[in-house]
Length: 218
Length: 231
Image (cartoon, rainbow over all chains, first blue to last red):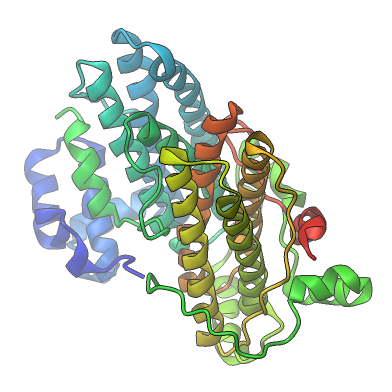
């Protein structure tokens, strides 16, 4: 499986933990970028990352809470996309219906993940500010497709690293919903609702960041 | 993983599910061995949210160590789960073959259904390979029968079957020991979900019938549900 293989991360500088840490120092943009650095570190093991990132990892608890916080950021992104951006556009028909339904479900994921992180003793990340390059129904659906499909890959990629069976069950329960959303959106766009070979490709954090990172407002 | 299926018909033991539903004693034994991870604790985890059991480093390491020494057994653990999934995928493959043969759907929907059938066949091939990689014997293809009456009925049955398949994979996730097997199962799980969602749009039913959190189904529930489809 192509899971957590450093050579397959298209995340540019983030694929190198040293550079990633440097980037975090220099920019202090958002916690999301920091999580990218942590993800890069995870590929090489914590010992390989700089002390700065190691310290940050220790502060956030690492492990399942860290994975859930990454998921929480993505769910915040999706929820805002449907519930804020979706409402600001003049959507119609199925697009409008999906934005409402899916937005409510992403918001429920935010609530569940926030509670789960707290129950693990972790600190839920704050909601970042987002920027969504969508000005029409068509571009809204195209971005929805990217977000939902990235969400599927993100959960599938992270799941084998999850320690707690309850957390794994929750992640599985959520990824199935993301996959359903992705299929419905892709059908609406006239795209194939499934990967042609019949297997969803798991994504590394760096791959997820390459898709979602540009939507985080600096 | 994505290599095309090679459907050689080597002599194999009777389909595991077929035997299970006909022999309740055997079934109970199997379920016990396979470990029926399931829906029991589901309601608790989402809102009570995952706090009750943090797996410690020592308990996390234990199953990994034991699975490497016991993987030769074909009736337990990951092999049993993979064979259970294989049986379901065989049934889904057979179902789509019958649906396509019936010719109710042409054009775009027809080609979608055909691609779903091909994907189920790819799942069969992948699961067989995974079972053999773990040193197990792949379950035999069960003889299947499906009510194929008309376009609407077939689409609704497909929606039901795919929702069942998705919930079956979800029900096993926590019981899988190997991270690689888990990754494979999840790569299939979300595709079953995509099939279900696509069919939902066809039959005008909910894309997310469980709401924001999909519900798992345990092995006995799934086996009872597919029993009518075993010839």
